[in-house]
Length: 234
Image 1 (spheres, helix red, strand yellow):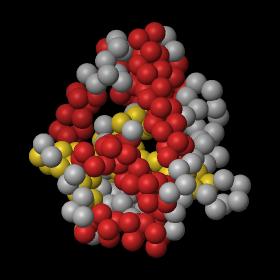
Image 2 (image 1 turned 90 degrees about the vertical axis):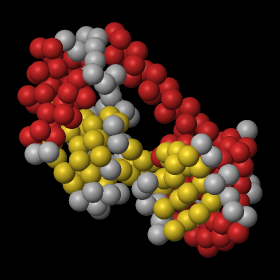
Image 3 (image 1 turned 90 degrees about the horizontal axis):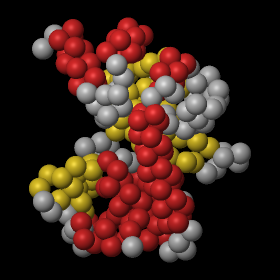
Image 4 (image 1 turned 180 degrees about the horizontal axis):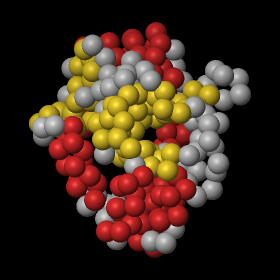
């Protein structure tokens, strides 16, 4: 498939995705004429915290990491965007700047759309606004759960809850009883997300491997006992 054919296929799929389906053909054509398809290499930065929020992105392939540091530069907020997802939702319709930085965890392919154009069109579509409201509600619910498990005093529990979160957000079923994350996740990232030391995370993962609850090889996770991990959401 040529690059042009691939782009046309992607645009056809976008046209009928929930994000764009409510736009009229003239409105979608206006978006299409102003959107750009770009590729980024692993490690490249899409935007930094404090940059002008001039673009909205739609990730076609790969994984993007969102990060934000507190004033001490010690605590890091980390989240991920997987393929076929619009981002960032934070600040939509209100803020002039990005609240966090975004970088490519893997080689990625994405579209970007001028923020002003996209938001002006969405603002005229009540169904689209409701769609984005539901998406934001789910994001807030997810963040609330993360705050709840961060206040758990037991470090091992925090780590397992973090692993369960990653499994739920990024994993895909390889069969009815196993879930694999097809993206590389480092020990350091789990340490940042769980508020634990790298050593504690490493020891916990080692124990989980010995218990045959998961496999972790070359930064890739395979979850073998879904009932075990899902019990940590209760």
